[in-house]
Image 1 (cartoon, rainbow, N blue to C red):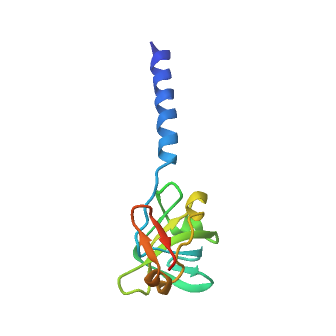
Image 2: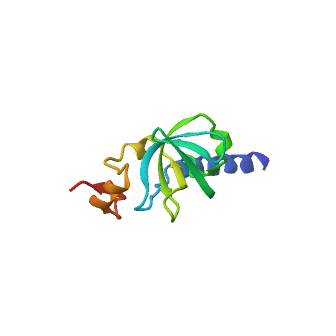
Length: 128
């Protein structure tokens, strides 16, 4: 009886793990792509320049789980990110998986995002 229950748990775990690993994330239209290095909270380096995380900012890892900035200290990461409403502080950060990083083109500046077309259904950008 216990063997059957254990087997059922193992089978269920095998079905859940691959499904969660393949979740397609959609990024908002205002998300930009860049490289960050997390320093002492709230400081980061964004595309080689000093920047700050906004109060209440969220960093999501490749599994889409929220992680603490301190756990990423000194790591150089390819990310998509958004600014807060005022435009000066980094609000949301998504650490990209390899297949997400391969989606190109993706705007790196606000100017690019204003001149390119966003295909919301495919979650991709098209240059004019």
